[in-house]
Length: 88
Image (tube, rainbow, N blue to C red):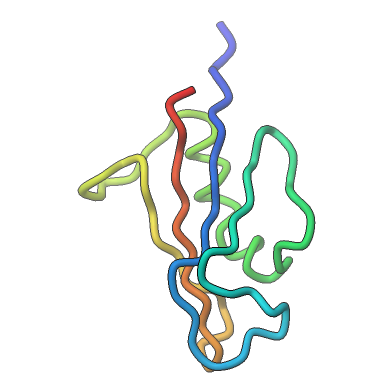
């Protein structure tokens, strides 16, 4: 049996300082088995494992297993991303 591949969206929910990729609150990307364009590769690398786990139906011990919050590795110019799994 093959696991169902879920759609996962990434949304910027907070931003401090100046993001070198110019990400801003409200920016959003959708993963449907492929990586979307123009998402910072450092931020993507920081959340790749969480995205993969959520795409393949796994979860984390958090209050809402469909939503995670991750901060990019640039702490001086922190961008906060919300990772959300769709029930499609």
